[in-house]
Picture 1 (cartoon, rainbow, N blue to C red):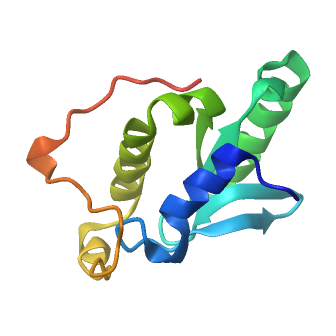
Picture 2 (spheres, one colour):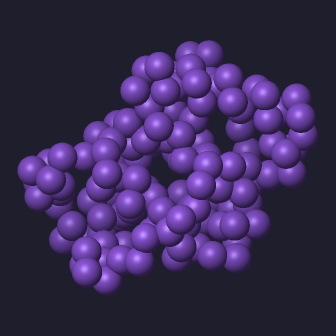
Length: 134
């Protein structure tokens, strides 16, 4: 399917192991669903949602989908398109926090970060968000 401008921009940050050495896939299938972006190492799905995802029927569908994925051990991290547009660095930090929470430290050390565009911050520089689930 055609990517939104927001998805194109996020894909530029995640593709080709650019994001701190993590491998992401675009439009990864976990039947019957397709995930916008998926990191198999962390079992993390990253979704960018537009206006339609705020409608009651779609919210229920998204909740069912997230529960289905959670049963398979996959965490869903969702951002509104406007969140990405207004705070890209903060969104990338949320992704980084989820990845490092889900991947054991010994696996993190194995990642090749030599040619990455996103260099992870030092742990001491991270200010944790109190952002709750949407």
